Length: 400
Ligand code: ATP
Ligand code: MG
Image (cartoon, rainbow, N blue to C red; front, top):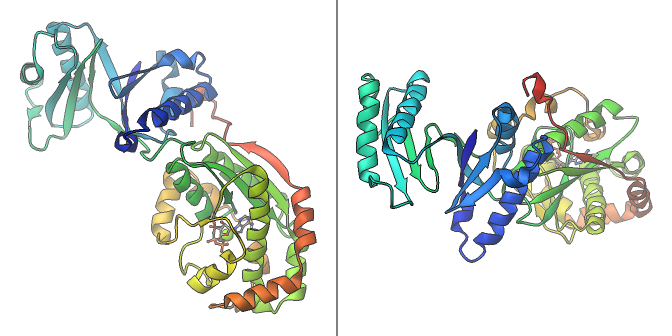
């Protein structure tokens, strides 16, 4: 099987397109190799702004799973490659027409690109002849140039390619072109989606999870590992750092007025995350916060929680409503895991009446008086790291 890939947004990069392309191809090779496609180096071919992936028929599920996890392409398609003669080309177009018709599509047009000018027909000639040939073979499959249900694409290059239905790519930019961020990953719905969103802009990810054992059990941690696996499959892996936060939480509970509890905990998470980020050379923090979703996410409280860190705090879901977040969560395959009912540490310690509009000055005073530095340092020195996102389904049993 040969796949054709269409580049996405990187076509907008002028001067540094080559650099983006290099990373895109490297990522593609890694995704193929991770799925056991050996010799991934030779499988990927680039010419004239298109990328081709070659793979044996039995490795189709692996290859397609890799393509479905690659940021930086706007679409991909299975192609038919044929001899560079008019007869072979027309026969391939008819075959493609039959496939599309078999999928229930009832109108089509042909689009052609010819970079090899020695081919006897020009683009217009190819479209006309192929259209006729398909119509003759399938009288019910109608030509519709304005709004066809299907497009049969022909490319005449060093080989001849014919392809129909194009699958939508993940778009975005290749991971590794926009630095590295540290994602605050809880077991909820939002933070995995936030990580996915940043990876879609080319950012590599590490993640930190604050665990409050025994208030939150091993199941909760396993759930977060699973979520890191899911997001990491798109970001070429995630290092997940688990930090024990029980002492920090106890100190907050004992030492602050109840209504400030959640804001104090968020500030402590930010402080610990910043320290970890600097150690692992991540240059920003990422959270799943969404404006006004819960009490701790009012503008005022977000100002409090972000007020102690010198790193940018990226909140890619800030203006996204919950339904949209859920749709995204389902589309990346995280939702079913996110809704497993193991409580997060924050739920157990949340006050009944949290402060809604905390003032930054007061938040900082409260926070300083807690003097959490030693507990945070202890949490950091006991951090456990796991590499996630690099495990894949057993394709021999039909893939996922
Ligand atoms: P999520 O669905 O991501 O858990 P949420 O709607 O439950 O978010 P909060 O619990 O208020 O919202 O958490 C806000 C953000 O704080 C999360 O999106 C996440 O980035 C971070 N966060 C919360 N709890 C933890 C935790 N235990 N470990 C790491 N990060 C956390
Ligand atoms: Mg949460």
